[in-house]
Image (cartoon, rainbow, N blue to C red; front, top):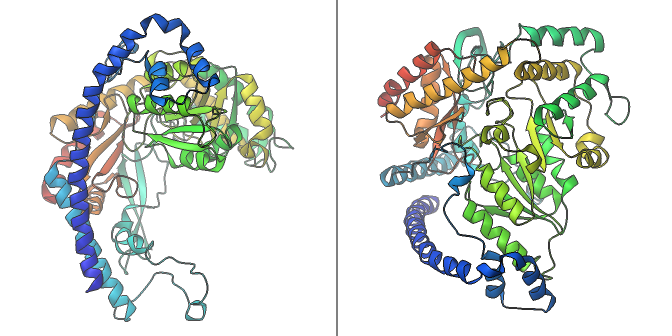
Length: 570
């Protein structure tokens, strides 16, 4: 009964923690509002010193002032602490993040608690060989060694994830366009293994792929150009860029990317994940500070950790949280020594792929300029999908690309290709060519992939002599607005910005994750369902990705089925 009581205690603890967290957050809001008056008073008192702020701060450091509150006062006197600076935006910026209802949160915790209890029961049955154990575990002769498999860490995988594992890794056998063909598979041991039946399920509406502009296709200009390049160069390169793998098509692509982004130079990499994880360590190191959004992608998190820099996390898209970290970094400097940081790098994304939110870039740039920090912008999901010209979140807000120090993006979404890029000043790119592990040791990008990027990018820019690129950008924007409005009018809780093609539909309950994905597939609709640990434990969701390739009839089919399906799940 020990594990059972542990589960009950854990469930009660989570519920109590939720109530305490809500109460502390409410108190924090009250405390913040009471401090606003003090900040405004400080602003008025120090208004005459606006021209001298850097000199005053330098003087205080030089003379060894230890009064951190006074230093904080001088650094902060230009800040009005308003929630959001609306004057920086040229059009309304509308995002929706409805807080999880209390009763839903309690029921969700109870659902996970019940799953945990049954998990311990099944582990008990496996221990006594009453139920067959499929999980990898230590051999008896190795019991005195350091364990290779951590039993508790695998608890979630074998008892919770395995119940809904059939919702992921489904094999498709067609182009991942607006519709896909799916290889049918079955399981006879509760999702531990799968067998293909030999049948193909055709014409499934694809609401899961990142095919924002519909360039994932096997016909048309992109496919024809990639085929011609394959005949000329072959499919592989067999070398790194710095040795024998630097082709003229690579240089043509990088020059085009730099022109598309409006930067001095750009560099392409064969893998989007490695573009972040291998280049951030080349730019940052010990004695540097990285300020990272709490919802940044795993590749950004890994790159920050590999760099050896100090990492501090600010609340998602919260400019007050970011500014506080910037102020503290300038005032206090490095831990123990209090020396100034060598570099301060703000790391954000254009569109956050799990939330559907868009970064508040005008405010981030304003803070970056005020505190003399650097900005790393990951436009994996926003490049091609946002802006009147498809140039990403910078184009969306009508900003200058020179205000972003490091522009990163991938070719895997809007361009229907593979790999990633980094754009910026020529000095930055030249440095990365010599120091980036992804540039020095990775095989060059496949020539047909490079040609896919070139052709699709020229179509977006209108350099192909047609209006196809502009038509696709307009169609994506219209589809996004239409689909989001349809779900919102039906009363569903959806997250994110109204212009984001990533549309998360909240499910909350753990049992609904698997049920929703399966029932949608039965109705020939392919979706992505996401739960803990990819999302907070009480915010499981289904994520739809809208594409320019979707027709109005496809979107109507999906939006009509969702209310019926959610009602049946209740």
